[in-house]
Amino acid sequence: MRIIIFGATGMVGQGALRESLLAADVEEVLAIGRRPTGVRHPKLTEATLADLADLSPLTGRLAGFDACFYCLGVSSTGMSEADYTKISYDLPTAAAHALSTINPEMTFVYVSGAGTDIDGRAAWARIKGRTELEIIKTFPHGYAFRPGFIQPTHGATSKTRLYRWGYAVTAPITPFLIRHLPRWTTTNDALGRAMLRAARIGFPTRIVENIDLR
Picture 1 (tube, rainbow, N blue to C red):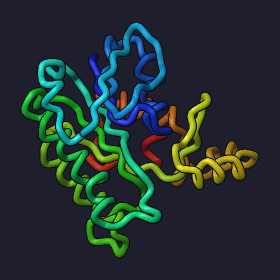
Picture 2: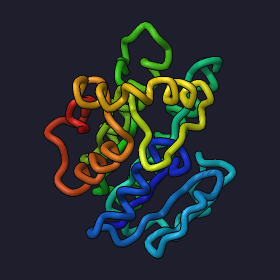
Picture 3: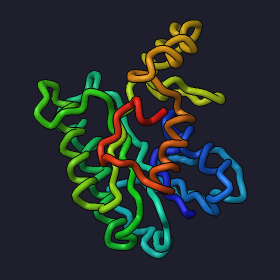
Picture 4: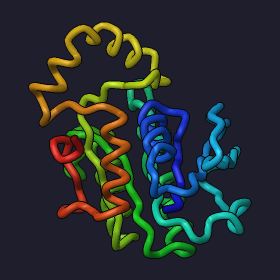
């Protein structure tokens, strides 16, 4: 398989990148983001873009890919609805529309979040809900993943300071949470493996809840 990953420098993206590079059936990974990953691997190529809404500089490099794992995201804390919409709706749907014209049968996995609801009270839930529907409408093999609490593994770190503090505080009880609360918890490497599963054999539902991502 040939895989594109958006947001490979983030915590979720680090897991997707690691698992993709480890997978024997993955021959190439193209990481697209605003800055390099710092990872060196014979399977990995990278493309840095100042504007992730415009993939036209990469048009000649995007053909022939089997899957895209869209892991780019931010916390809504302290953000206006307009700014959050730009990052959580405009960017992923722009990527999906561009890639669908080049690789219409590819698997596209959008990492959403538990609690996403297009009719929800919270703006972030409604915005991500719109994104989920657009991804599913755009790709016959489009998926929205809704992880809950994600424990970083293998040295992965979150870019959000509050999240890093939270992970440090909960670290002593995290193994217990992962083992006994499968409906609400997962790890970033398990999430990466679930993305590969989507690309290989798919899931029975297009919106995949946390318990099915284990």
